[in-house]
Length: 386
Image (tube, rainbow, N blue to C red; front, side, top):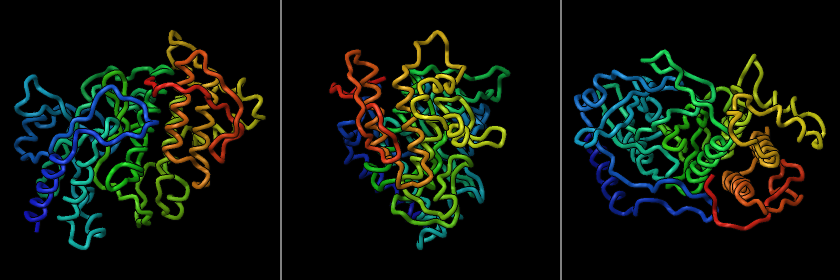
């Protein structure tokens, strides 16, 4: 059964790599990315090759999320091409979970999961390059993202082999670029991936930064298809899980929207999702409990004080719109949250207004049910890149 399922995986991957042109169609509203997507077939590695690529797991790149991430170098590449390796072990592998999800048993279920994740090709999704299965261990090889995780830069971590912090203080411009990149990745997962996906674990440690601090979402197999199914186990990270999913197991794309809203609030405030036993959403609601007319006075005090003072000032109108958008995303009622297509559209408007000094802003009723009267950009230009 194992060999038959693996052969089926390789056959599907071969067909997939021959039938794809290198990138999926992107909605007209979505913004340009600095690189094109190149589709490579998923490779199978031996344990010996994994040990050689990682020098026996010598360098740890990150521990701010499960699983630990190790540095690797792809074989046969000149110059040596960096990659990363994650290890899922024992009961934490897909097998136990998949045995309950697939009637054909855990082996074929595992191949199905690898096939699904390897089929995600988007400029804002970290590419899965290969795998290795050795007894109770699953090794996953991903593309290398040179600037680590968003968690490192927002909240600070130290690399395993250094006493120096790997943190870079993101300015407002960089934070908004991250917001756009992650929104584009989620919009792709929800609407254009085949099958469509709910990520369920969007948080700063699952967002990786590459050249130019552009962001990509990392996905580990064991991501359910987007069919509204209720699962027995709640998967995610405390503070980022949507209320309806935590309480009732109701899983929809709006659960990812909630998690995205939490990340957006972290980008603005620099605060952790839970500090001093207080949830960031509650802190923001208390901070902004006054009349909307006072928001312009309060919002600058809400911005992360660590943003590089040498960078350009945070645009007031942009800050207002971003905070309104974030608060809409974390509405308790999932039906009142925007979908990711609407989120991308709003971020597009924000970016256009920043680039176009002649941009006019009028007070129109927001397309988001949960937002008050909101400034909307009226200018019409090509899709910007922040």
